[in-house]
Image (cartoon, rainbow over all chains, first blue to last red):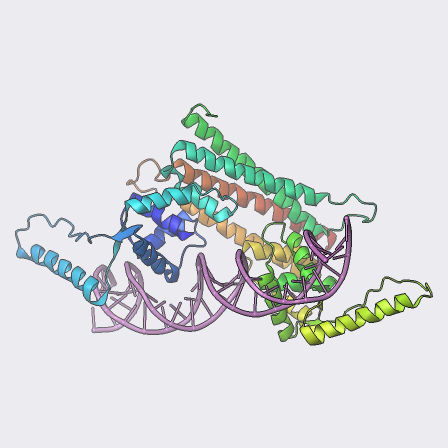
Length: 211
Length: 211
DNA sequence: GCATCCATGTAACCAGTTACATGATTTG
DNA sequence: CAAATCATGTAACTGGTTACATGGATGC
C-alpha cells in the first residue's frame, strides 16, 4: 500500500528515505506514517522491481561562489569521495531515489485500481490523484461514491432488520444505536463531500460523457 | 484486538465459533469481520489463558414431549454420544464456549484501557461499553473527546503552517485541500456526536464529579 | 444420495510494527 | 568533543489474511 505513496512522492522530486518518511507523515495526515522498518525494505523492493532507482547523489555544495580558494573544490571532492565510498564500501550515506518510467506506469496502475473499499488507500489515491488524467479522476470518485452508497444501503438494511413479530423494543442497546446513527451520518457527509468533489471536477474539466 | 469482541459477545451468552463470527460481523458493522483463520486460533488462545472455556454441549433435544416412543430417547442418546465421540476422538463437532471470571476481568481491563487513539477499537469499546459501570463509561468518552480535540488541533496547525514570506499561494493542490477540509469536518461531527453521547449519559446516570 | 450449508481447524503468507545496530553530520 | 539529529538498515514479532483440508447435518 505504501508503494503508492512512495511513487507519488518521487514523481515530484528525487528524495532519500529519511526525507520520504517525513513527507509521508503529512501526506497521510499526521497519524499513521510509515516506520523505517517498512520504508527501507519497501524502497529496496521497488528498486529491485525497477520502479525507482538510486540516482547520483547531487553533491550539493551550496554554490560557494568563486571564493577562489581551493578549499571549496577540496570540500566538493571530499564530499564526492565520501558519497562514493559510502555507497560502495559500507553501504551508508544518503541514497537518493528517483522514479523510473516503469515506476510511473506502476503509479498509474495503483491509482486506477478499481478497489475503493479501503478507506485509507482511497484517501491516498485522492491525495495523489492530480497525477491522473481528469477522466480517470472522475472515475475514481464515482467508484467511491458507489461504494459509499452500498455501505449506506447495507447499513439501512441492518437498521430495521426483521420487522418480525418476535423481537420487542429493538434488540440494540443505546450505544449500539448511537454507533449506527454515527455511521449513517458519517456516510451521508462523505457522500456530500464526494459530490462536491465531483461537481468541482466537472466544472474545472467540463467534457462530454462518452457511451 | 478481537479478544475484546469475543469476550464481549460471550459475556451475554455461550456460543460456538461459527456463530460468534456471524455476531461479530454486525457488531463490527458489516465490513471487516473476522476470518476463521484468526477466529479459531484466537479462541484457542483465550481458552489456554483461561479467559474462556469450552462448556458442556447442551444436547438441545427440542423437548420432544412424551411422545412415548423410544425414538426420542434414542435420538437424544445418539446426539450425546456423537458429541462426546466428536470431542474426544476426532476433535470435530460444535465447541461451545463460555466466559470465565478471568475472562470477565480481562474484558473490563480491555474496556478500560486508556488508549482511545485507534478508531476501530474505540468503536468496539463503545459497542460493548454497557458492560462497564457508568463512571468508566463517561471516562472512556471523555478520553476519546480529548483525543479528537488533539487531532483537530494538529490538523489546524497543519492547515496554515508557516505564514512565512516564502511560500506563495498555498503549497497544497485542490485534492489535498479537499482531504484536509473533509478531515476537519469529520472530526467536528465526531466531537458533536461524542458530546451528545456524554450528555445523554449524564442525563441517564446523574452524579457528582468527584475531585 | 448429492448438494449445500454448518463447523473446526491448519499452513502459508502478508503488511506492517518495534527494537536493535550502525554510522555520518551538525551544532553548542 | 559530546550530544543531538540525520540516515540506513536488519531481525524478530504481531495480527491479521487466504487457501486448504476435513467432516457432520440438512434438505431436496
